[in-house]
Image (cartoon, rainbow, N blue to C red):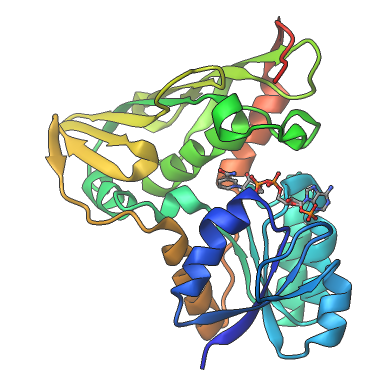
Length: 307
Ligand code: NAP
């Protein structure tokens, strides 16, 4: 019997990925939505989550798809009312608010799943296995895309807490923190802020790790054409390349078959598995790298950004 799930914040990602994944899910059925201005054909719609939870005792799971700055109150509400909760990435606007949610989920004995869709990409498990017993020398992460193409008109990404270029860049961090055998820590960061915006449009970061491991990350939101969502990892016994956000993998230039890329179906399968096991999964490592970048980063003025 599938679990009844409510989707909250019906916008780009809810329509493009969550709804199709739920349509094909054996574990969940989309029972209702809560969104101030939007609804889905044929699905019971509420304007806010509180009304939905009042009316629908059968809804035991809630998946929150609104931007990160506006997610905490609904996450807290759902957990307090005994529902299992899945969060879009990034899981919140601050580390502390997500830690508070982790504590609350534990206290209420429900599942909290802070999802990272790029971690569910096809090549990530194979990359992690390939790296497991290797000595990593150098990591190069390149995350460049055209904000006007991928986020048209989304003003929240330019507002405080919206992360700017780290909204896509954190996907790269979610992959790195899942596959590297050793943790990295930030050494330097240069963040370029458009003079009329509160979040950066580009960033250059350097990291260090154990045994002389060095990493660089280059993030740019003004790259036109095909996006670059790539990671190259040089080890003492070969070079691993991930491309297309973790969907494809090559070793020393030779492609490695990894199967179909099914990020969102994988996320919902993981959510169901966590609920069955009565566990939570809320790894904050990718968000911590972003927080460190804002803490350590040198601010550089960039030309004003206009859509
Ligand atoms: P979006 O379309 O701009 O926003 C989603 C919905 O959230 C909106 O349609 C809106 O619905 C609701 N919302 C907006 N502002 C709100 C506010 N102040 N308070 C409450 N609800 C608000 O954003 P999105 O692209 O779907 O991104 C949402 C999340 O998914 C982000 O964390 C993003 O990083 C992640 N994500 C996005 C993509 C992508 O390609 N777009 C990919 C992967 C992950 P109502 O007005 O109807 O309430």
